[in-house]
Image (cartoon, rainbow, N blue to C red):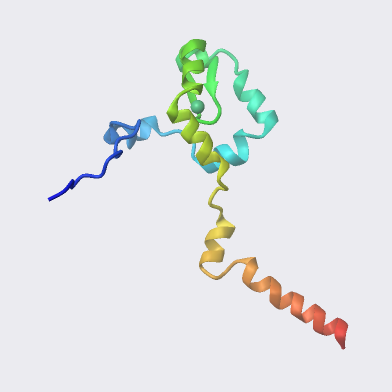
Length: 126
Ligand SMILES: [Zn+2]
């Protein structure tokens, strides 16, 4: 028999059990996309006041990954890392919204709008 195992199944997230813990839970992608990536909010997050509870006194924060780093060097090496690049790629895709879920269930505006438009066209034509 040939190879049973697929190649390239490893990724940077080595310990899935640790990642599933609530204490390491970070902000969700849609939260980052809709709130944090706004230029004003981004500037706010990058220049946070000293916080003794956060790693590195909250001075080295990656907005895309919603993560604090101890030093500037750590943050810079993080920006060059695969984890950060993958996260940026994920953030470029549009977030899953309530409208999209409603559309999937057939409740969204997309199903109702054409009917309204047809009525208008009919009203103008007559
Ligand atoms: Zn990052």
